[in-house]
Image (cartoon, rainbow, N blue to C red; front, side):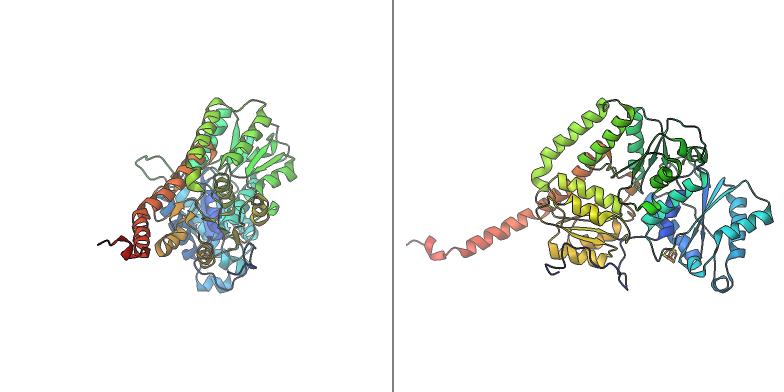
Length: 473
Ligand code: SF4
């Protein structure tokens, strides 16, 4: 990489994607719908699309994850998929009896120009069903990533339910990006410590990570209730962890612009500064000071930062994945002295580029920033810049396998390890857990090789000493 091409966001339009760093748009929609109570998801497209989405979720969450399909084949591709979609709606209602059905389009049905609203209206007339909530979402995966599918679907869910004229109430809207279920629970616990009533959307902490119950449920318990979503327009405040999300698909911006709900759009609370901003927002909202428990957790985090900074300063991390997570981990690395060498996301449309440039003004060396990147670009940039450690999901495992760059696993999907859903990174306690994982990975690498390196160093020193200097008669 030449000096002139470094430190800039390259043209992200590639004709061929080699080992992509993002996933498909309706997959993000599936996860968002899994965060709504009593919901079944129906993917309008070929069987392969829904199989891929099921499999990716099952491998990460290690739970049964049902995703229905309208099973289009060559014939419907030519003549239209209306009949299949209507039959799929009948089947989903017969088998799952859901209160809500989320219908997502795919590359195929988007290219065919399937009109979901018309087909659903026609199905309602034919069946007389007016009690099942059916939420169609357009998710053309050839244009956008699963991150954008997640935000778009969350926004459409709110747009479907939220009504004007709702009586004002005290529950704060909390809108989250696609984070681990452990992180969802940690945010909920922080809100509870503050004594703040909230409506969190989408809440898939139970539907995708259920306690063992000994029996399979077609639709697992949990998720945000449609009744609460309908009242989001009457909330006093929306806190959204979506700084990188574009306004056009931002759920918080929709609530602000449609119902006048004030929006505080924050980065994900990973690292001390980002978590402080979340605490400050709650302090301003409640008028109360930070609860003692969270103050102690902040203190423990600062203590850990002091302990580990001498190791972190030597690290040059390559950070990749979804924009919101990548931005948050970058902030956490910077405040711990680990200046990133490469920061990359597979998502082509987000605000991460300008945000990073602003955040990295005090970096000793500007990292390479890649948007709309695939792993061939990330791998090359990591090698060119001498990255020593990686933070990201399992898609980047070749960095470790081929180049010995160890990965601190974070984000989605984690399919080559167990416990991806249990990775905790938010809040002071979560940031401390992340910091320990990060520092220990550096130390593990160091102790796995330092004896060999030391021996090689000594041997080369001995070899450099002229032998005759030591020989005496
Ligand atoms: S064809 Fe499109 S919608 Fe289907 S799995 Fe592939 S990227 Fe996703």
